[in-house]
Every structure is written in C-alpha cells, then in structure tokens.
Length: 423
Image 1 (cartoon, rainbow, N blue to C red):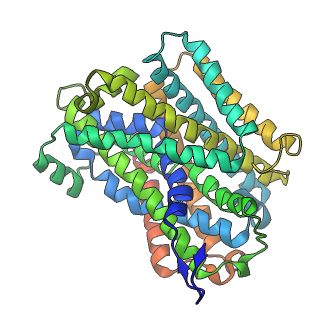
Image 2: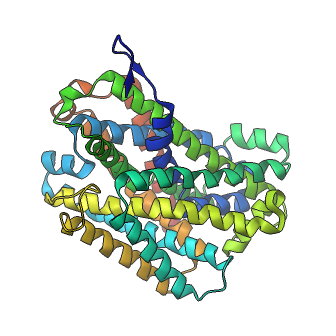
C-alpha cells in the first residue's frame, strides 16, 4: 500500500480495481446472472429493492472474511482448525465443498449454454473444452496472471447497464421497486429471494477473500506472521477494495434485474428457459447481436468465477487437514492442492452430463448456497470477535451490528423458505 512521508495510507485505486473487483465480479458468476435474470423476468422492477438491501450485507461478509485473513495470516478453514472442534470443522467443510462443486457445475453449464448460441458444436464437446481450459488456467497460469486477466474479463458485465438504459424503463416503477420492498410469503418468491441471497453472499466468497489476502502477501514477498503486523491503515485500504468490488457486483445485479424486468417481464415472458431467452434482455442495446453480447458476458465471468470456486474448495480442504497449498506452488510441489482442484472441477463437469436444465440449475445452485451461508456467517462473526484470534482487531460495534443484521436476514429468508416447503 502506498504511503506518504508521514506514514499515512493513501488508497490505491488500481489495487481496488484488483482484489475487490475480482471478488465482486466473481460474485456475478453465471449462477448469479441466471438467478437475477430469472428474478427480473418473474417479478419485474418490483424486485429491484434487493440490490440496495444486499449491498451492505455483501460488504459485511467479504470484509469480515478479508479482515480474518489479514490479521491471522491464514485462510478461513485454517483458523477454524486451530480454534474449533473437529466435528464443526468437518461439517463446515462438507457444506462448502458441496456448495462450491454444485455452483461450479451450474456455472460450467451456463457457459456451455452461452457458447452454444455462438457455435454449432455438440454440447458434450463444449463441456470438455471449457473444463480443460479452466484447468489449464489454474495449472499453468500464475496467480498474478490469473488475477490480471480476470480483472479485465469482469468488465464485460457492464453490458447490462447499457441494456437496461436502452430499454427505456418506467421511472416511476424503478423508484418504487428500488425504495419500497415488496415481499410475498409464498414459495415462488422466497425461492427466488433465497437464491439471490445465496448467489450474492455465496459461501465461496468467504473463503476466497481470506485466501486472496494471504496469497497477495505471498506474491508480494511479504511475510505475514501475525496480527501485530496489520495496521488500521491496511484494514482501511481493504475496506476501499471491498466497497469498490461489492458496489460493482451490486450495480450489475441491479441492472440485470432492471434489464430483464423492463424487457422480458414487460413482454409477458416470465420464465427463462434457455440462454437465448436470457439474451433477449440485451436486445435493446445490441439488437441481433444480443446473443453474442450475453454469451461473452457469461463466458467471461464464468472463466473468472469457476476457478475461484474450485480453487477455493482446494484451499478449504487443504487447510482443514494441514496440507501444503497455494497458487504460488507448482503442481509438483502441491500435489494434494492441485489434485483437489482437478477432482472438484471434474465432478462439476460431470454434472453437465446428467441432463440438468442449465438455467434451472443456476437458480438452484444459488438456493443451495443460501442454505450454507448462515452457519458460515455465524462462525465468522464469532471468530472476528474473539480476542484470542484477532487481538485488538476485533470488530467494532458498528461492524458487529451490520454483521448480525446480515446473519438474521439471511437466516430468516432460509427458514421462511423451509416453512413454505413444509406447509
């Protein structure tokens, strides 16, 4: 981080465009795009309020995870292993591995469906090529290369902003939908709400952000040996990174809902069954090239997000069992780490040979993540308030209030959905 002669921190805009943007864009993975598009088509502009409401929650989740990584110099599951019983560690690990694998599989399916709009190739062939490319990126691309490539791929998501504006939505409906929450207590609405919460606050973000902070220090040659090396200025810089990244993610979420709500919902198309259906929301901006623009966006963020999920799963497993891990290692140096990446990626790929509906899979993967999010959020709140772990860097009152409100909100939505299933 840059400093002046008096030692005060100066936020780096380019750093914010890096770490925060990667996490923010990864949050808008194909699962998120499919979920937001489905919600916009089904509920229209009345669902826009979820974007401003989830923004502070997104910040709380990612900042707490980042802070934990910076202060301890360890990833999330390494901290759990050091301070909590093994049954809790293993239960959390199973939940995250399942969630990451399912969402990675759904994202690969979304990418394949998008590629099918562009090239007339057999689906199974596209699945294999996409998976092989993702693995090649992780095995033969350094962390720094992956980070820099992903940073620019993320900008393809800005197409949704233009599409929403070109659709000329009703201003009154936008204002009401944004400022006045409209909540229904039926299964359809709560399923979409839990899916949005799940894909917005996905469990893989918790672990990726803490691991990313540690990995960044390794790449820069910094030795991170404990909490005494983390200043308030460094944590302030991290807040800037995350605010920027989550704002980017949240704005894209808002405009995807607005674009689909102002086009598909308005035209009476309330169900998105194919990638081509979802692409129609971009037609006001791109015309006949809507399919191309949609495909490029989904493919770009897919190549960003899937490695985050599969690598995150490898980090979690290796930390839980104390195995050597890190993207800075060569495959021969971290055999278990890279082996886990391969296994998770191949299982995710295999899901796409089961005939699962790609758009429906994207929404259901968000629901799965929605169920794994509350317990993980609870754990992070407990850890970041534990002086034995955080020292003097425990949470402030304001951050605790935001964190607990986030936990109650996501837990309530999940419980509400379960109740509708039972009744």
